[in-house]
Length: 212
Image 1 (cartoon, helix red, strand yellow):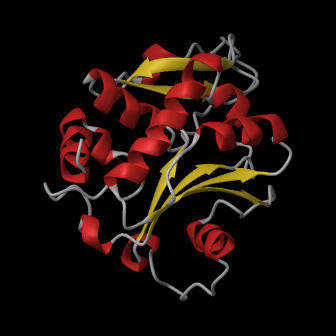
Image 2 (image 1 turned 135 degrees about the horizontal axis):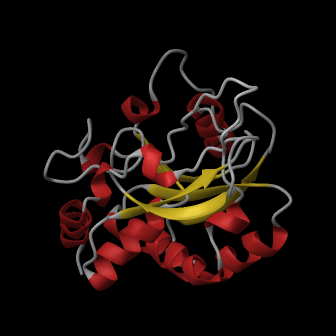
């Protein structure tokens, strides 16, 4: 398939809405056009307690689809550099990804694992090795930032024609009866996702991250 057709499949599946600013397509799914992209950065960084462990996010069933999704992104944006930025310490995962990715515009870069490594300014500078302009959003510098789940959805869209219907989320805290990682349908009310124990001695509050 050609690059434009790949981008159309990504758009039609809903995957173009992933990431902080979307994935650029001819359908206006992002603030910039496909020709404006300098790089696509997929983040597998665990610098924050709210960031999911890459080994849990990409289990054995999802890892192959992640790798294929990265390759599809490379083909969909042939003029851009597609980078998987992964924290050091995940050597086996890094090697597995390196052995599976293809394309001259796809690369794997190991970055630091301390906060605020995943902040867009720090991340782009770490990947490119170039100074990052102060106060400029990554998307306006031509960089599309995606989390580790986005390539999986891209693969599902292109290879199987599947829409984005679920996201893997982490649930935890002292008042959570069954902490762990679960796949949740997009749009599911939080009250239906978690079960908070009945504890009258402590005030309970729910803190949401952006993973859903």
